[in-house]
Image 1 (cartoon, rainbow, N blue to C red):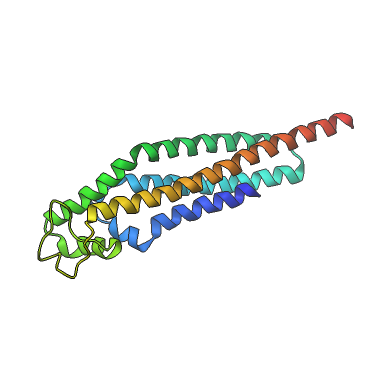
Image 2 (tube, rainbow, N blue to C red):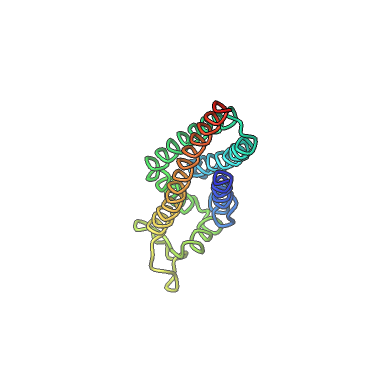
Length: 195
């Protein structure tokens, strides 16, 4: 049951990051960085698979099937490995993701696409310009004092920490699920040997 709930939590976080109106509007252009959405799609896929595997684990426990419980354990182990790999990938590439988004913002300012993309960044992050570029027609006296490159970095680091904490919690639930599935599998085998 815990695997089904943790799978739905992973799926919910992935769907939130993918379909959040602010996030989608910021990264919806053709030349937007793709690293962020790759990690989000991995989350969505892992959440869906975890829910399915959790259902089969519950079914195996109800039917007292050693085969289903062993398969449940093996699937949880594979998903756990994939989550660890995705976490390492995200941790190692977090600076690249932030730099890509910052470069995207900078290129939008340089290419004259000031009205559409940059205004979305300014509204969402409550910032204006960068340390190297502070256009007077875009950043007036009423504009916030925060530079967008710093605001983007802070926002993505905070978002990646949330994802990391959720991942650690789900990894703990998966380890508990693996332990219980093996204990139940051994108990079923021992009860069948007695009979």
